[in-house]
Length: 223
Image (tube, rainbow, N blue to C red; front, side, top):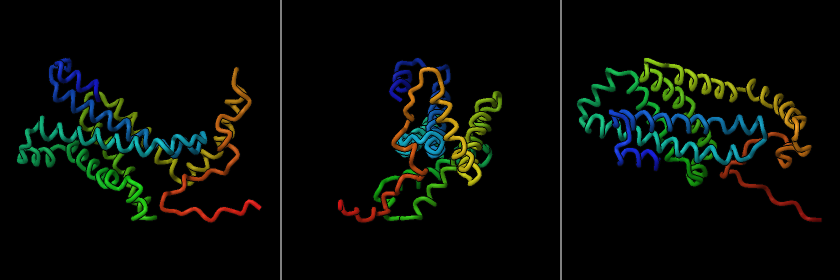
């Protein structure tokens, strides 16, 4: 973001700086959103707890870039002319998809704190499943925006679909099956350590991180 601001203030963007800012903030938001979706599958596949810890902040930064993307579109591109903005949303499908993705991400960003997690309880997890249709809408927004070269949008679409499949029961079982095979392959690699990569997690059955609204039970007596 700092590099983008520096290029914008120093006049180092393309001949169409508004379009450049719009595309770069939108793409950054999509990349971060996809990375946040990859947190749970990476944890199931690698047993890496950091993937679960990073996904919340990746989602927040994705929303930040999505907000910048929308602000540039509304303020710089259309000059807050609500008549032109309404016309663009009605006549241009990519604008409608982008606005829909942002509106789905908005409640997720507002309820991303531990306080809201405790207030909503189990409904918090159901609400945050909106991130998947939001990601699909964002991919459609990108695909319909860049009609000339659709390779990158199609790549993102394929990744999002794979991550969605990984959330289904068959996908979860497939990741659990691949996990020990991947661990054995990594240990057999030349120069690899014989110690498991994540030894603290490797021997444990796979569980999601305990939500903050679930209270831990009483500790057993040391005797």
